[in-house]
Image 1 (cartoon, rainbow, N blue to C red):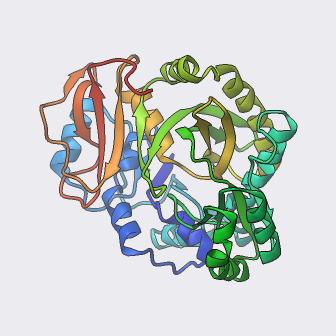
Image 2: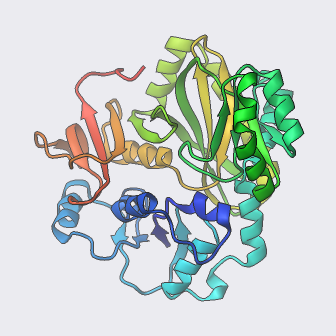
Length: 380
């Protein structure tokens, strides 16, 4: 049985590599608001760290959906720690919850996972996909180790995006919109290189049409399995905004109808599984995802970055598969807005058929909302 912990600030904690990490206010608010989110994702017998959960809300969703996961009773016996992401910070949190060192990853294990979680892994996966003919040359992330290399990269590309090794939701990015802008960004790039030792660089695609991800699960034997598709939305600044709720088959059909890329995605999935198994080599077991994008002309940028952790895409995928009708479509959204309280949601057999529900209790600064619409194939 797993004990789930929602710690969405983990990528930021990895950047500082501190056990005593204090997230910024916005990240802390997101973590508090979404503490109950793993209730929708866990398996029977699992539990979730969500102290003080609204009892009436919990009773209502249990009655409506028959949730498989329970609220943790503060006894660590029999549970395996399962945070949103691993770091020294999340390890310390589980230690404070009563888990002894034998149940938690050692320093060398955490260091290996931190290394795998860096954007260096995106470069390695991109190289494998380029060699397989599944990523156009020059479209994958490149490793940048000096300001001279950064300057040369910007000179060779009309629009460049430099990224810090660890960051999330559009943060930690330095865009050089034209070679002439490099001087204005040089100081920031130098500071990042001094701090981390390397950056990654990739072309900025102004003609992006769709964000998507392939979702995977790595097992304890070192094998990587496909866990589904994620079609997601981002704000103009790169922040995650939400996910399409639809079956894998519906998402694939819609992508193929508009762009003709179903075969490309299938080939990419097979190549990525092999590359991920080689890269991870048994050092991590759990959910992960590889972000991609589709350009307006149908070109597939098959590796933007690797997320070696749970993702919102996994949440949306599991929610739709478990709690929505197979042919339904809708949206999973995250934002600072009012709790879903429109017309009552229509349910059938423990599944959402129509309307909106909140996936976290009311009164939180950030709401996680799932909504199913009446129209089909609305999302591309």
